[in-house]
Length: 240
Image 1 (cartoon, rainbow, N blue to C red):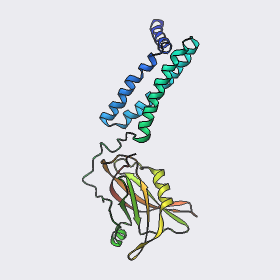
Image 2: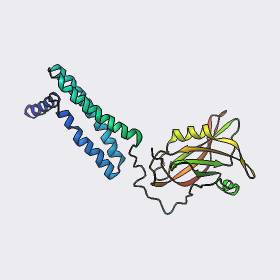
Image 3: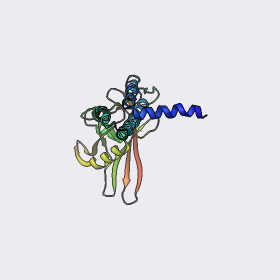
Image 4: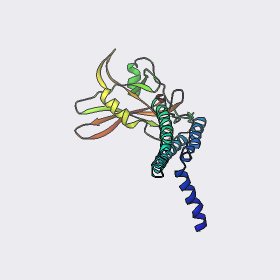
């Protein structure tokens, strides 16, 4: 037992004392990133991020050890290379994060769904569905229209649910944006309607899937929610 522990202890000791060894850990980690890109799998990207952070911590520990063993000059290439890698991937995930949520989804043939419209909905369509989606400025950004009205005691908001797994899509963003942006009084040929705008972040441009768009009312006095209508729509996520 002791003989098996000694090589492990020796490896760990060497790993942190030899300045370049922790840096070599970034090589397979970058490979994991490109594997996730090729296979288009979010869970592989998540593994990459965890490994990247863990190895950066290991480099930091090694840099501190270099000071104690009087090889402080080696901490500079360690820190510089690590910062460059973190900055590069931070830039990638800030401006164009990989999102493969919808890449492997299929559209069921036995489910009825609607397609977001490009014009103002007709009164007939609103009375039939009560909630209608319209295309926004970019894919993943949608307008919504409803013939329901807000009152002093109630506010309207939306929920988007992935019918494949019943996951709520961008729940906090959609609820807050539709609560804040919905408003009554827009002119309509034979009356008024309520409209607003929201964004779905799950998925990417060109990868469509079905979501159940639900219209809800929040009663301020009673502090309770009530579902008013629901319609299935073919949607896609916004490319960040």
